[in-house]
Amino acid sequence: MTLKDGLELVKRLMRFGPLMAMATIGIVWCGGYFPPSKSLKNQLNFFFYFCWLPFTVSNYFKAILYGPGYAPKGWKPKYEEDEQFLQYCKVCEGFKPPRAHHCRKCKRCCLKMDHHCIWLSQCVGYRNQASFMYFLFGAVFGALHGTVHIIFFSYQQLWVRLTLQPKLVLGVMISSGFGIGTGPVLKIFNSQIIFRASTDFIIAVGILLYSQLQIVLTNMTGIESWIVEKANWRLNEVLEKKNEEFNYPYDLGKSANFWQVFGRPDEKVNGFDFPVKEDCHKYSLTIEQLLQKKIKEERSVPFKCVKPYR
Image 1 (tube, one colour):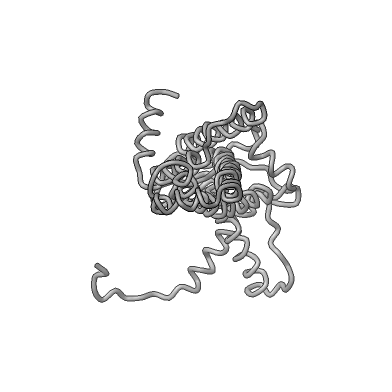
Image 2: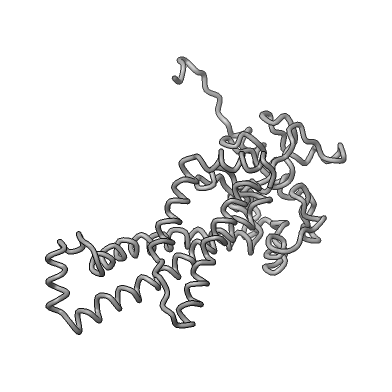
């Protein structure tokens, strides 16, 4: 990492989304931390729990630093005859590569754009998709590991004590204001707050992890799923080809799709070119986008502006 990269990372981290993400990770991870006993089993458990934090945070930093990858401004395909199959971006003053889309917040055309992530404060796309997935995996299972710690701690501190010394525990709870004090009772009270936060975190981020995993296995980004949905509508309603579906060109099978994201770099996959099915054209999806845009223009209704919007 160069000094310029470091400064860029710090700049991006000083935004609302990244600050909230880092604070949440810190609270959940610290909430599940309990000093290990001297047994080998607990020492190993502590070691694996500690590993979740650097794994999660390092991939979070990578996802921010790498970014989705951007098409150079004024980009053109290698062969001039290919320009007819591509959309033109007026903002970037260049053609959009296949699977690229312009992000209004990033103000650039992002390669294989999936969505603009508020927690990264930038888009998820070709370059940072794998790091983003690793980050989600570490966040969910690290929080799950911490939640198990909290459950066992609460059981040991509360249930065992209530069974053996119920009057003593009740007296301590009353004298401490049911958690407003020090000692085991306060730890139990605080752990329950962290438990609620961690379970909410696991559910929310777990749903995102599941949806992103589906995107990886189908090799279809969120934006592309919307394009395919409109393509099926065009086939069935406009062209009246009932029960016919659009042949999505980039779904090469779950295994190939998975390794395209997490495997070794491939010359055929560079953010500008992607392998397609044998029965598909290299620009099948972009041609479909142009056809949808044409229908949209044909069905558009002109309006006359009579006063300023603002």
